[in-house]
Image 1 (spheres, rainbow, N blue to C red):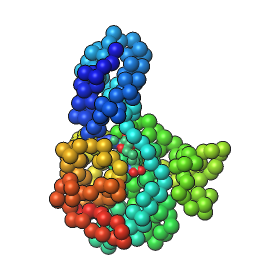
Image 2 (cartoon, protein in one colour):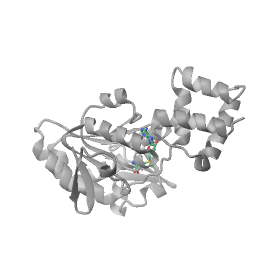
Image 3 (spheres, rainbow, N blue to C red):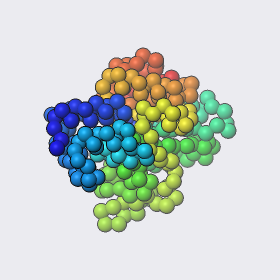
Length: 273
Ligand SMILES: C[S@@+](CC[C@H](N)C(=O)[O-])C[C@H]1O[C@@H](n2cnc3c(N)ncnc32)[C@H](O)[C@@H]1O
């Protein structure tokens, strides 16, 4: 049903739509299983018919969404690369707080947020910084192309592995444990606004408005150079003057575009507009 020729067609389609670059040697089996199961479930004759629906007859976008949900890698956990959250609350937000007018909220985007651990880590760090939170509105928005992870993020339920790096005192204060699952306390659910958004969809990202800070960690590694550049320039447009981008530790803006100014706080390299 699904063969290597089909793989190159669909991986090219996925790349064009999402920037995600799939390799035959690494991703063939996953796509083979997913697409064969879809062909059976949708009662289609073959791959050609499935691919036709995906491109020309996917009115509500559900076929594309399911395909995206199947190919994304969603690994994340609370306090991942925790020094960046420290720089955010101790250096970046206080600096921006001085620059912005007093009635303006500080706006932070987590793109991509996966199941929500990254933006909720920001919330937990901010809660320890009462000064900042009391005097200024801080809006946190999380986006991801995968609708399953956004649903999970909205539910606010996390696994033991996902919360392993949270210090016991904070874990006890902000989560309720039930079996092996940790639920955020109701006061914290809703402190992050989650949306399904593709970072390549210029119309959708424009609707999000302008941001002071963008965290974009561990997504660009899945893109090739041209896609990285496109997303970096989208982020540049989405930032307010003086705003910052945080990347994952293995990602360097200087290798992608030269429009940002690199700045070092403690041991963190971050990028200013
Ligand atoms: C490994 S997770 C990173 C999560 C978090 N930022 C972290 O570092 O822990 C990568 C996420 O990127 C998302 N992603 C991939 N391509 C995307 C795109 N074009 N637009 C938005 N999100 C995307 C995936 O769905 C996945 O949840």
